[in-house]
Image 1 (cartoon, rainbow, N blue to C red):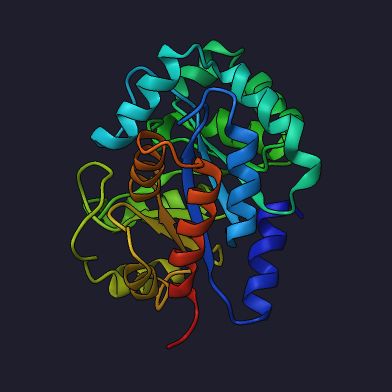
Image 2 (cartoon, rainbow, N blue to C red; image 1 turned 120 degrees about the vertical axis):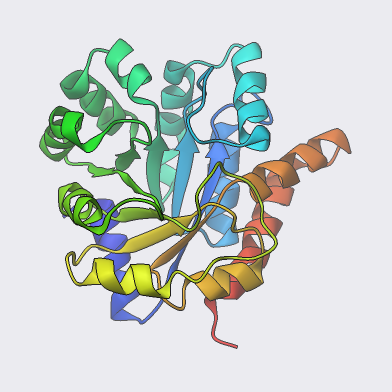
Amino acid sequence: MSRIDSIFEELRSRGERALMPFICGGHPRADGTADLLRAAQRGGAAIVEVGIPFSDPIADGPVIAAAMHSALAAGVTPQTVFEQVSAVRSELSIGLVAMVSVSIATRMGGPAEFATRLAGAGFDGMILPDVPLEEAGPYLDSARSAGISASLLIAPTTPFKRAQEIAKACTGFVYMLTRTGITGASDQVPDIGGRVEKLRQVTDLPIACGFGISTAEQVAIVVRQADAAIVGSALVRHLDGAQREGADPWSACESFIRTLGAGLRPS
């Protein structure tokens, strides 16, 4: 059983849900990924998505895209992120999942080598936002062989038959987008109840929902149906603000995640 499986199984046994914040590796400080992960664990994250900086980020809005470009400009590479994760892995009990473009996986040796390198660095899984189901087989198989999870995205516009096929191909959890478009904070979360219930008919995997979730109140709405709420742009923007003001980004990360986590507790 992978760490991701164990985390969700333990949460389910207690009737609890997961908060899954997203950070951009190497942002807001090139050498700060390990410190951000420590802060995320202190704040109450169950699993953290670590974005591997990419020059043409897929589906990411301006906040995350700017963070990735900033990290790249500071000299951050996938290997940089891997090394920082590896350095802190033994201190952490949370799950770590790489959000990574298939282009990076291809350039880092292809499916088998990339999955092995991810696992060796201490990652528990990967999310591939830009690989179509028809081409995902080698990556999904390699993830299984390396003992890590692999998740694909399901959009609101994905026909249900295809969504069913994607859900069955995933391991660890299914990543369901709350809305179409790109990442970014939103004033409200669409009703996801019907889509979640339909997916639960075809998979026993946990369902994690992201895109547009930015407050504790929105986290609470999402986890009424889903197993996990993913918060990305709002946290990255919060860290950017702390950096501009000369504040400690690690404390800002911990406190913001703790605030979001209030949405996991029944009112």
